[in-house]
View 1 (tube, rainbow, N blue to C red):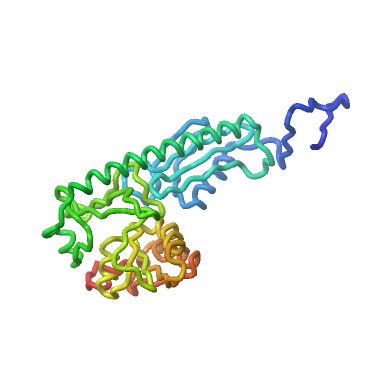
View 2 (tube, helix red, strand yellow):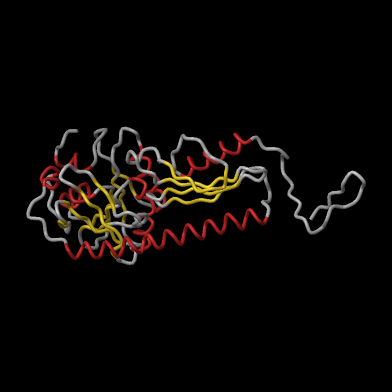
Length: 303
């Protein structure tokens, strides 16, 4: 370690860590902007302000359901800017420190690590509670005689069941354990169990086959299966295509994987499908008409 002498020529105390930085003073807005840039790169879209008080703050992730606060961050804005952020819905979590600082004081490192461990423990408990609730509700479901969502999408249930007035789709992890449920009402509104895990989890339609299709929504998955008779894996949203594709590749290393993305006007569906395909050596299939998914395309539904 380098020894830095003070103005009198005496060496500084050796029991203190020396932190060499490219710049000795940080403008707070620079650190906050880097922090928000890191969020953006990780896939968490947030345009609000960042409070540098070292406390937990929840926020709305842009592009998610209005009024939801699935985002969270802790930002330490002192001379060693650092923190973490998370998207609870998509399972994105990352720690961060500002560029230009080669070390962070041990006390700050310990605080960040303690917060991370506490966050992960709380998330595990929430996942366990949701899995227990999913099992309880699933036992109370019954086969759907009819449901307006199935009629609107022109599909058969393919394992979906009814709970009260909602269509229920079971969600399994890579160990084939029921860990969450998706509920779809008569208007097509969708929700999951609060606190339940979704990242990397899926619903499978059809028997194991050499070729496996992966898509976003349940109706899309059913339409693809009914058209192709291939196994289809439902990932439930674009952000989950990549982790699901990785799990499918690990479970079926010799299968051909095709990511059947949505043709979103925003381009998100296409981008996420391409990203997932590249990660697992798969192919991409996108509907030809902008604004459509494969259910729209295969059933002739014009949006």
